Every structure is written in structure tokens, then in C-alpha cells.
Image (tube, rainbow, N blue to C red; front, side):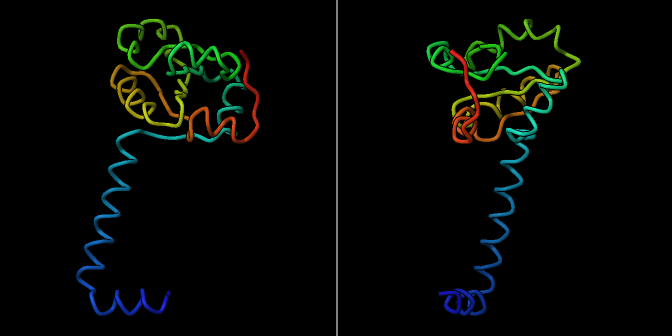
Length: 137
């Protein structure tokens, strides 16, 4: 299998080069789009050191079904109008959590524009639960 891939790449070096360039552009674009991601371990360290606030972007119903301890619930579609609630946390890192990471990047970008230090939790609440970390109801 690998021999075939190498043979293809050497016979079609222009095509292979274009594929590699497109892949690199996609990675750069995705990284810039959503801002910095942090791991479950980094989240725990920041929260334990009182350096961060967790904002859960899921709908209230999903939040009530289980969320990270001390998380604030501000649904993604209400973030713009409720951003003022985060004003008292402007000196802290805002950690954005959603179901699997689909909205946290956009929310982080909006908060950064407003002057907040915002990051997203890699994998969202699904990744948190997947690592068997605690949630509260």
C-alpha cells in the first residue's frame, strides 16, 4: 500500500504537491478560524488556579443534562446580547465549551474582538465526558 502511494507521488509530483499545499492551507485556515484550543488538563489547571471562567454555549436543556462544575450557561445564539455578563471576568481566560467544538471557535473569535482572552475546549463536552471527567446537573 505504501509502495503504491510513493509510486503515485513520484509519478504525479505536481498533483501530490497541490494536494499537500491545499491540506496545509486547510489546516492554517481552521486554526485561525477558531482560535486556540486547550485540553481537558489545561482547563482543569486554569480553573483550579482561579485564572479562568468556563462558559458553556449549549442550549439550557443540554446544559441542565450535565455540565462542567462552575460553568456559566450562555447559549451560543445569545452570546452577543449576553456578553456584558462576562465583563467582570475580562481579566480571566474565558474557556468556551460546546457539544463537540462546532460553535466554540466562532464564539472565541467574537469574544476576542470584544477584548476578552477566549479559548475553546478541544472536543467540547463530548471530549470531557469521553475522558470520564465529572459533570454536574
